Length: 229
Ligand SMILES: [Zn+2]
Ligand SMILES: [Zn+2]
Image: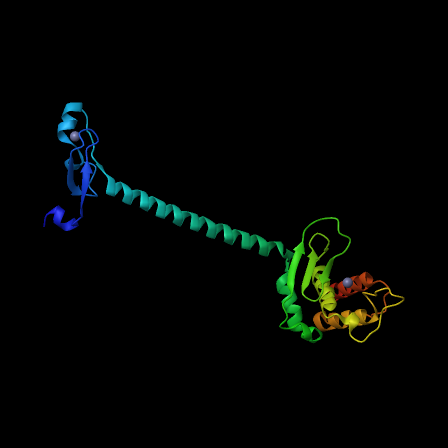
């Protein structure tokens, strides 16, 4: 079988750039194929004058464009993966993935049962200079200050604290407004926090602390003492 038949490449029009003479030849020819060159013009010029195939040229540039699109899609995919990885990593504080920890606590502690099936956004704020460990917005968003937490236990306790806020225990039948002042960490909050700690960490600390941050520290210390035992 001849070489031409085997390939069965469609004929394309090739034009000489000098004499404008055209002829039909396969679009894809090897560089050494004499059909690529205009012999009379080459002889006259003393060097090879190559014919130009507009169709092959178009095909090649279309292929280039296609591969450029492919390349950019790949770059975007890689960048997206990297960004997702970075975002996931930034939610990790002292080795605790805050989003996963929120889900874990809600699943584990019966006291958080009302939060099951609810969508709670979890974020980590890495900015400096905030005086608290975290906060909750309504019962749908939790923010942990990544630079404030001192240990993994501290991160977990901060999440427990904010999840108790998500339970909105302040308004559930316990009038804790005194003289128009809103009591955020009232008796009911503290009792609920201590109960959550009992269910999650199997530690029991009394709720009778004036400042809630002392109660948080007490729980963290109890968790650490229990582990060291
Ligand atoms: Zn020519
Ligand atoms: Zn609080």
